[in-house]
Amino acid sequence: MMARPDHDCVLPRPRTRVGTDSQPVSVAMYMPSLAGGGAERQCLSLAGEFHRSGLGVTLVLNRVQGEFVEEVPAGIRVVGLNGRRTLHDIVRLARFLRREQPDILLTNLDHNNIAGCLAKIVAASRTKVVIYQHNALAREFATAERWTYHLIPLGYRLLSPWMAAAVGVSDGIARELVNDAGLPGGKVATIHNMVIGHGFQERAAEHVDHPWFDDRSSPLLVTAGRFVPQKDHETLLSALALHRRGGGRGRLLILGSGPLDEALREQAAALELGKAVCFVGFRANPLPWLRRADAFVLSSRSEGFGNVLVEAMACGTPVISTDCDHGPREILQDGRYGVLVPLRDPQALANAFDTARDLRAQFPADMLIARAAAFSSAACTASFLSLFEKLMWPNRLGRRPLVRGLALASATADTSGYHRRSNNLQDC
Image (cartoon, rainbow, N blue to C red; front, top):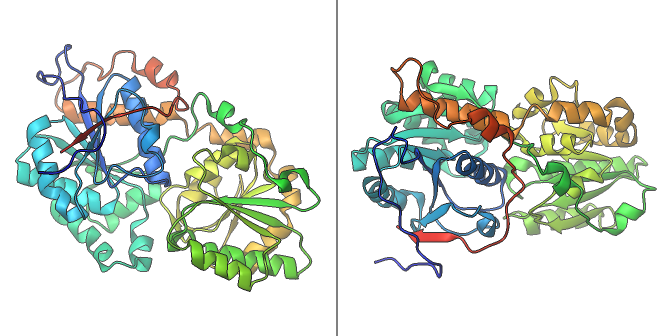
């Protein structure tokens, strides 16, 4: 018998049949944890939007841990499977599906997408599985350290009959799901990430303090992301060194944490960047840091979408990004809204740093803010609810809305209302 976390347990209410007015459609969102990454932040925001739209929402986690654990919106249950590995989740998740019978299981991230489909098979459940692909497939598998990533496309292809739908966070990801993973085109949809919602400007306006904010004699660059190979901070640091050796005076604030922390600090020291780089650490709200930068920099080798680019643009801050698969080119519309540079090219990135002070004239704040508004919480939530509605009532013309007042519920949702509070946690 598994140990329970030290939190109150809230049992589910008795269920009624899907489609009745007495019980909301239920969505279980399955993912590894609530670590401080972009995918985790996105899913937590989406869970809040689903809940505010009237759906019954449960977060199902491999482990109830991570930087965002205390930011789960009130009213959302959290279930911990407590498996040592994703493989161990399959039977426990199948047990959850048999007991809870959620209408939709929205799985997140590669291995969890596989585990969710297998759990549906084991449970012989009628739950409709929707996989949510955040990462680029081809690039991820080309650079992955774990060999199991190479099996993901084959797994998707074999498990396709048990998937009700697959969602890619960009058009490029959606194409990979069809071309590389062999999923039927009719099952695949693109739903861009929600980034901008009511309360965004209030969070962006929060006060942050750092000595470099008061000394604007040097261009100030900011980056944010986990310290993992995909984000390629190594090239970023090399580019900054080249920029400064060429006479540039740019300085870099690095927000984030991760397994490469020590290695990146050692690289910065070896490049003699001690006075030009500051490792700020993880920040739950990076927006004020982005707002006060001369430019935001993304050096990734691959991205599924690139939420942080939109966040920087919504703060009125120009962006410099590698032209990686897939999101940045879509977001920046082929360079219309920001600077795109080749992958793993420190000199090209250094050349972009040389122009950091001129970018605000080239990319005015009002233009960037208008572009960022296209990636709103309202648009993302409405797209998901429309997809769920089609899955729940595929053959019914004039289906009743999944949520009454859908447009109003989505448009008025506030993604900033995550308060630190005790959450409803339950072991599985």
